[in-house]
Image 1 (cartoon, rainbow, N blue to C red):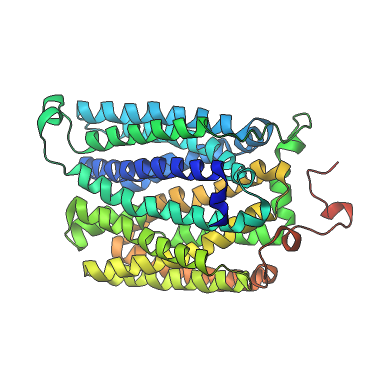
Image 2: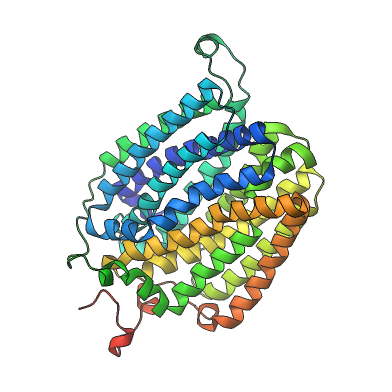
Length: 429
């Protein structure tokens, strides 16, 4: 609990709880709305593609902005854009949109906001707590994230099926519209709490803008096998093994549970992750971080295969919970590696590179899932994804032995030691 001694850390996590609840509830509403319009798995995949593409287009400026401007201000601007996007989704729900292209356009704008806010948010966290408490902050941040993930999808399913009563009926609000109103309230709460933070990181990168400065994040990641290995491992495992985009199909056609079942399926990985993050907060990872991460990736792949084979809601929920618990350990290790192995003045650009990998693994992974499900069916696509995750884990363990042998999570042990100029931080000089 050391991280909670910081006032700004407490407020930041309260803000995150609110905005993640709203975002996860909104994701359920958008997925169900899109599937209700087209009934095609591929169109569910396009929702992930619409969210991913801005991260690809704006990768370089997003990282540079996070290091060149006050990271708190960047976050405020990005989430103000999210407010307008949610208002647009609400308007589409009220008008009864019959085409998905307008929804994709709004999702592209949401993805644009996320592209700029993700590196700024990631780079802001080390400013909120002392370095000695950073791993604890990452662990509790993960627990809080998963707590919101547990509640958000289930809450989205409940709000989506809320009976029309009173002012809701008179206003014509139902289904997705109710969810979007809730998301708007969470965004306003988030903005108010971020405004109240005392921390003022200011400008971290003081060199004049140039192509070399903008590309420094890539150069640093390329020169660090630990960072490159951990980022690319997450990219390919979740890209191939993720089944989030297919959950509406499993809920509707395989398990026959409807919107509420979809909310439960979306929440199950978060339940497992939350449980595991609380365990790690009590018994922190101190040694053998790299080998533990690879073991957990293997467990994630096996659990994904079981989910794909399951015809029982309870077995599916258990498999997803196990996959979430395994992934949580990997998330904590990767998050600690990212910030502790990176100098403060470069965290925005390196975090932007990481955001690209995460976006590819999540949003582009949803597109991949939709595409393979269109070809082979949802069940076969999910089973293949789990088996591919196992293959990636074995390959990466051999290709990145330094990552596999990573032991202690500390800045001193992870950052490159002083040496030849080619090994120095690209931010130096």
